[in-house]
Structures are given as C-alpha cells and as structure tokens.
Length: 97
Image (cartoon, rainbow, N blue to C red; front, side, top):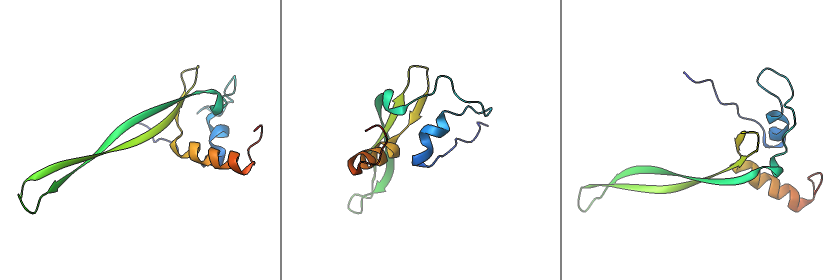
C-alpha cells in the first residue's frame, strides 16, 4: 500500500515542500512561483438513468487540476494554492510581489 499523501495548509505549502521526508532541508530550496505551471484535466463520470427511456447514460464532467513542475523533478498539485496566491497578490500581502 502506498504511503499517505500529506495535505498542507496553503500558507505553508512552499515551506513544507522544502523539507524532505527525512526532515532535512531541500537543497537548493524550491520556490513554486519559479516552477512551470501545468494543467491536467481529469474526468468525473456518473451513471444516470433517464426516466423517459429507462436506459443508463454516462455523464462526464471535466475536473481541472493545476500543478507546478520544477526542474529538479518535483511536481506539486497547486490547484487551491494558485487561487489563494492570486488573492494574496491582489491584496498585496505576498512578499516579493
């Protein structure tokens, strides 16, 4: 069985990815904003039975996920972080912006 995937607070994401599983700091440190932004589209499908025809229909909806892919091979899902970061930048509360 695969190990559990850690979930981090949005404000702590960059800090957390710069600590390796063994507790040592990542060298060199990663800044997510410097990593390439990628988009992944997955689909969530449900089966719905039509009341008129009584036949099942498969209805699929796209689910867009955003990832940051860094040069050192690290990939981090940042879907929620991207929105949070944009809000912080809009409010002027992100350092270095």
